[in-house]
Amino acid sequence: MPELPEVETTKRGIEPHLIGKKISDVVIREKRFRWPIQSCLKKNIQNQIILSVSRRSKYILFHLSNGSFMIHLGMSGSLRITDNKQPIKKHDHVDIKTNENKILRFNDPRRFGCLLWLGRQPQKHFLLCTLGPEPLTDEFKADYLFKKSRGRNLPIKNFIMNNSVVVGVGNIYANESLFISGIRPSRKTHKLTKKECQKLVDAIVKVLKSSIDMGGTTLKDFVNSDGNPGYFQQSLFVYGRDNEQCKVCMSKIQLERIGQRSSYFCKKCQK
Image 1 (cartoon, rainbow, N blue to C red):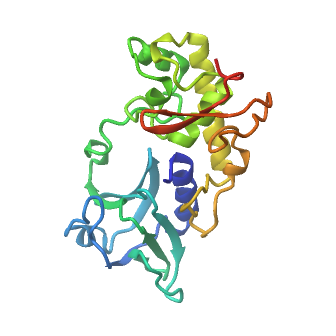
Image 2 (image 1 turned 90 degrees about the horizontal axis):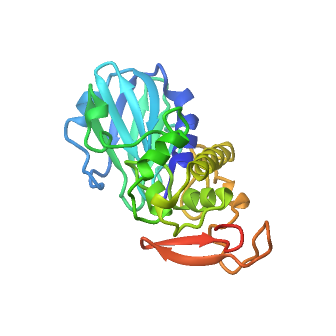
């Protein structure tokens, strides 16, 4: 499932091809997504100029003069820039065409993604209004995480994967961040010290930035806007490495189910 680094990589890839371009046509081959495409979408975005493109959590937002729309990649979605010469592939469900014969093509085999009109106040949409701070901004600090963690009796891994606490820390990046900060995934959140919160914030920022620099993580479905995979999986310390040797201490990586998600850790390196 594309997480924050994969979505940021996609956003950076498509943005230069779209800013200042006029949407000349919208071709919708399939409307049935997690949230069906609204009947007003084509009317609202056609003939509008794309002023800017941004990301909020795992959503890519396209800002026009009359409002905004967003695309969520879901479990298996991808966006790529193409043109009319490229044949339509299976699961190429939506084309957003520009006046310069470029096409933003949305492919989503499982159709768990979405393409939604947000209007003039996108921050008030029900999918966006309850989101926590972005991890790569000044809002995400150790003091903030420490205050949020007080009185919380759930495992720390579940806590940092909660989008109302901080956005974009999916399963892969939670496992890696906890390893780097030396914290066991099952550790109770309220037991974290301020010093540990600082280590965890630093680790989350480091892991996400590194993944973005490497084009994200490709474990199964993800490809970026150029159709290429991400390479961060080559740098993973613990995720998907159960029974393999820890790259730091050579102990065996352990696997445990926490909150119905696979959690990988080193008993020696993570206390």
